[in-house]
Image (tube, rainbow, N blue to C red; front, side, top):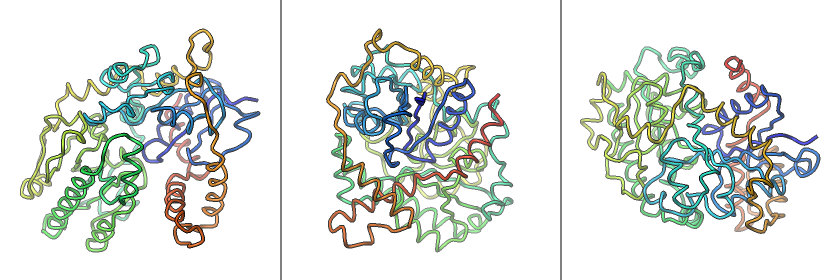
Amino acid sequence: MALDFLILYEHIVREYESITLLKAELERRGYTAEIRQLLAKKERRLYKEDKPKVVVASAMYDNKTVNSFVYNNVGVCNKVVNLHWEQVLSEEQENSPFFNCGEAAAYAMHTCWGEKSRDRIVKYGVPIENTTITGAVTLDFLRPEFKGYYKEKEELCKEFGLDPNKRLALYVSSFSVAYMSDKEISELNDLAGVSFDQFRITACKSMNKTLEWVDKFLQTEEGQQTEFVYRRHPSEWNSPILAEMAAKHKNFHLITDYSVKQWIVAADTIFSWISTSIAEIYFAGKSCFVIRPYPVEWEYDPVIYKDCRYIDNYEDFAATFTAEDAPFPIDEEMMLSHYNQTDVPSYVRIADVCEKMLHEDSDATGRKPFDHFTPKFSWLKYFSLIGLHFMYNIKLDPAKLKIFGPLSEWAGRIYGHIAKSHVSAEEDAAFRAKIDRFIK
């Protein structure tokens, strides 16, 4: 029997909680749904007896992503919903064809967080009938209906061995490229069609200076009364400076468990650089401080941060730990133009989009992404993932082996992504049990 919906994800901390909520709502309506990671082993059943009627993708940028996210997972499928997890971009990215859902990808159904993201992709060629403003599902967990979903500060601190009587400071990092290799940056440049070379320089300088300030502060008397949690970006996993900080300060913590929203809700003081998680901070009713030791070039700065208030020196940074009732660094009008909010939660609105797509007559609408390009199945990816998943199961990192020669680094990176994005059956059940309490 065919599957109704296949929901694909890339990063656990960014997506899994939200798509579990969406899956629960679709199943509540009587449909079948399954969640799979983009780098999961390809399964024959998804091309045959369990072939999904609708693919719900994490992104849909161009022909390559249609091919990779759809055809290489399920074969031809003309019903594709794009959850589009990256919608608040820099000005340069907003003008890049890659980020504006072109080529065959334009003919998927694109969910938009707000008017700004909808207007942008329509401007660059996405038919307006292929867009729906739904708001951001990640913000649903901060709605009044979900009160009690997140743990309070005391419970969270005790779980991780932090002192709940101390100030809990949270740094939401976006230094994803700071310690990337030249090869990784080159691949990113080729993928996105914009250069991240200068951004890596700015990110590295800003990260090092920010951590220099944190290091200095944690050595003060006030710093000793602070539990500092550094929340890494999902792509930030090879930064040796973080390990050095954790080894030096017993109250500097690198914790990746739970979503960033859980830590936002519990934190007393919150810091950001260019993270779009500033939306979660705003809708959680919290304030925060934007820390920028060096200016961020306009081409890399998310447009939502335009004209934001920020801190650029150590003295003002140290003063934030005792500040009370600090104003939000971004104006409310700017926030609401990017993040649409209504009385109906976003996960319900997105489920409505998925349900409509399921029952829609594709021939009548002409919405057939696969009419616009020739799909190509990647046998290399198919067999590589079989081998890499086997190696992951026996905990054998190919990056540490010489047998792959020049491919060892590439295999090691894919292995690392598989390891970081794996969700066990027990973890999935825990996500679902927590969410089911709030789905009626």
